[in-house]
Structures are given as C-alpha cells and as structure tokens.
Image 1 (spheres, rainbow, N blue to C red):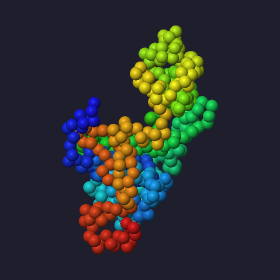
Image 2 (image 1 turned 60 degrees about the vertical axis):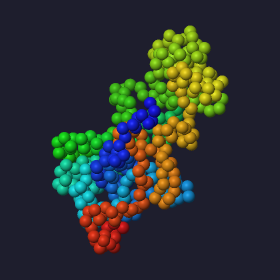
Image 3 (image 1 turned 60 degrees about the horizontal axis):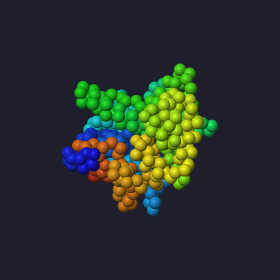
Image 4 (image 1 turned 180 degrees about the horizontal axis):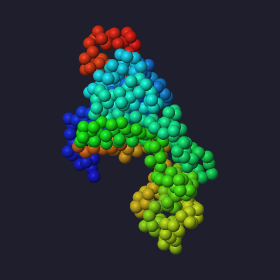
Length: 404
C-alpha cells in the first residue's frame, strides 16, 4: 500500500483520536510519563505537573549536543504542557483540585500511599469528580505484600525473572538496555486508561486503575512464569529460539545477520539453499533435537557471504533475515523515515533533533510530535488563567513558592 492511500481520508482538524480528552499527569522519571506520552501522542491534552524544581528527567544525560536539554525528557514529555506545582502546599493542592474538576484522567506514579497522604489520592479526588479515571503506575502495585516497596525498572526486570533469562546460555542475568518494565508499565497504563474511559462513557462511572511494573513485564513474558510455576524448564537461549531452529545471529564477511526459520515451509526452502536437500523433511521437533548441527550449517553458509547478499537472497526465498543494526545504522534506514519514526523537531531552546515518532498510525486521525517537551513551567500562566487565577493571584502563588 502507498502511504498516500493509507492517509487518503485524513482529517486535519483534530490533534488525534483522543482530541478533547484532558489528562492531568502528576508523574516523574519514565513509567508514568510514558503513559502520559502515549495519551498525548494520541491527541489528548496532557498537563504535566512538576515540582517547581523540575522533574528529575530534565537533568538525566545524555543531553542534546550543544544544549542543556535531556534527550530522555524530550522523548517522553513531548506533546505535553508543563505546570509547576508544589503538591504538598495547600495552594498547590487547590490548583490541582481545580484542574481535576475539568479532567477526564489523572495519572500518577508516586510510591503507593504518597498522594493519599497529601489529600490527592483516588478516594479524595473521586469526591470532587465521581467519573474521574485515576491511573496509578508503581513498581509492585497498590496492594500486595510488597506494594509499599520502592520499585524501579531494573528491580522489576530482576524480581520477575526476566533478567535471569536474558543473555547467552552460559552467561549471567542481564537487564534490558532500555527501560523495559517502565515502558511496558506506561503502555499498560495508557491502554487501561482508554479502556476505563470507554467504560465511563458508557456508564458514567469512574474508577481507580492499578498498573505495576512487575505485573506488566510478567504479562509480556510469553507465559514463562506459568512454565516456572509448573516446574517446566525455562532455559536462557541467547539469540536462539526455544520454539524453532536454526535461528541465531550469524557472522558474515562484513557484519552480522539475524536469520533462521520458523515454519516447516521455511526450512524446506533453507535446506535447499544451503545444500542440505536430504534434510528437507525434518519436522520442527526434529530440527529442535538437532539444533546445534543445523545452527552450524547456517553459520557456515553465512560466513562465506555478505550481509546484504544474505538479506536479499532470503527476501527472494520468503525467509526472515535482517542486518543486525546499531541505533546509528537504523536511523539511516529509508523504511524508518518512510514510517515517520524519526521526526525533525525544534526543541524549546531552538535546538533541532530527530525525535522518535509514535508507533501507531491512524488513517483518519493521524498523530505526530505536535510540540516539543515544554520548558519548566512554560504553561503556568495559560493554565492558571484558564482556572480563573488573576495576574495578582499568580504573582502571589509565585511569591509563596506554590508554583515556583
């Protein structure tokens, strides 16, 4: 399909499919902000509440070259507005309560019990707005024996057994190179928020949504926890697959390729290609039993060819293969740019960088990076004016430290 054909019925009068939805985001670091990022990308108006000193993410390296802006902050807080509020002050709390009266969603990722202690928990806010959807994202969840523990991304990866299965078979546990549990927690937070909004629109009922990093990464672990519960083996496979063979990273004359087979029809094609016609009729279970032997055959085939030769030949045969790219290499791929996955964006200080674009594509209500991450408190005047605060009242809030 041509890109133009996919977007032939596009609307340009909406920010996205969630246009008109107001989200109040009281979050920090990554998991909570990621939930808000997805909703903001989808077109919701997301007001991010930050402490007057700023979210910690603003100061986390790496920084944009020649700038004081954090690439992490620019990535996860684009398409949002920034309102600085000290949630522990009476005046700051009053501002949040006024916002909640107008809001559809409230997202927070503080340690369980923190916001209720400040009078901003779900049961506090539902008295003000009964149909509010209140999303809490935390390490271990709002209940359970470990719910009050500090919970960060690498803890969730290691606690759930995910890290124990990552890496080479003869190696030790290795965490993901990305904030995997945070990303999944944010993704589930956003999906759950939209499901709860659907329920609210049908019934008028709000509710409290509880998403934990631990639950999220367990859900996305392909049933491995179920295998563990039944005492079944969960081996560390490295780049091989437990359900198919041969599959691996293979060294070529000029780099590495990830290639292999999944289906019997794939193997029949590959066996002929690597000169092993006598093995064409091996079933999937037979290939698993002879994994090392077949892996060596494909490794030898790859060692004599370039990456491009293998990728193109496998494409001709309908077999899966790709160059093992670095982030710098994938950033140059035409396909990535055709999919708008790197969007040139001017940041708040005038810097220009390619920001990773939204994953989902909407043919009727397309989404993009509409605005960069805001500078700290950039939208204070606008938001407070919308809430009815006069210039004099805003000046008083600044003097008292309620908004910095």
